[in-house]
Length: 240
Length: 240
Image (cartoon, rainbow over all chains, first blue to last red; front, side, top):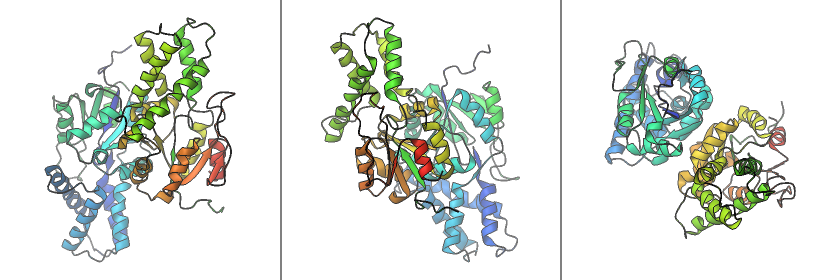
């Protein structure tokens, strides 16, 4: 019998947009399809990077109290309208904008995600802890076959990560103590916040989150309990 | 191509304790096991019926505002201590009481439940809407292999069914309108409340909820959109 590395851990909670799924590829493909060639040789990957870049400042306004809680669906939609205007792509119809924005609810898992979760699910309770709307995370998980035992999202406490209430909510809803839960994310701010509350942490590198030349921090750090290349590597290190 | 019976329905939400699971059998077996013969020829099924009977009045006190919101885990535990005292079964140790109370989080699915849900899951989003604590429903679903896409529970809005906020929360978290969601339960008060808010309804008869001679209302009624003998019959009627 192997000694379990983290015998106290009973559950793992996962970031979704970026950590479990490749939003850039899904959105860029959908934008290219819906544009139907009307945008010439548009770099849709870069378009998605800019779009996604407009998301975090909106969440931070909510966290700063300068904006009331807003659905992420609406945050993406407002950003999309601004960006289409700026990029002179106003030919997108209302229906096309609705469909493109909804692609955030169909973002596809990274190739390792489903297989890794299936392995981790055998020993741990696995749940999401996402800043996306609950309804979006339900759609993403169902569409991508991500086998989560439960869907938790910041919306359930009317705020966004890294507000401590989000991590505490997940810990409570799992019926556990903080040290019995491991937060998994590719964004370090997320696991640093979880760590400060006593959760265990796993960093998963996602070098392609913003494409081949995207700037992402993929450096493993000793401050995290686990550092992994992907969900299979995470499962392997936990002997799953 | 068959015409779908309820083409507008996109999701189904399920009551858990009684509708999806046979709490009586699980709890009675666990009580018998833990008593280790110290209770003679005790009728543990009847014991569970009494125990469960003490649960609803506690929820109703919360709904009436005469008691603050309390976890269902605590409600069951308080009732258990009272009942053991009354039945002169005080020999149950603290550890045994904790273990017995936790059996509410391992209540087993009815024989048709997993197979029925697997069929319904192919067309619909399927989620729980339970009065049990979120952590209990997560444990019940995982332990029993109930393949829900999402776990919703009244705890998420700090009240209990049939408070309208519980149904509205599930509808919002599914990203749908009320008429696109079907509430499934064996307790008529639950689907009557959902119907009043515009949800579709399915009644599932559970004649054995309180054992062979238990008093349960299993009468099919035209006021419900579907009346079913079990989850397989429900799936069959929805052409799943």
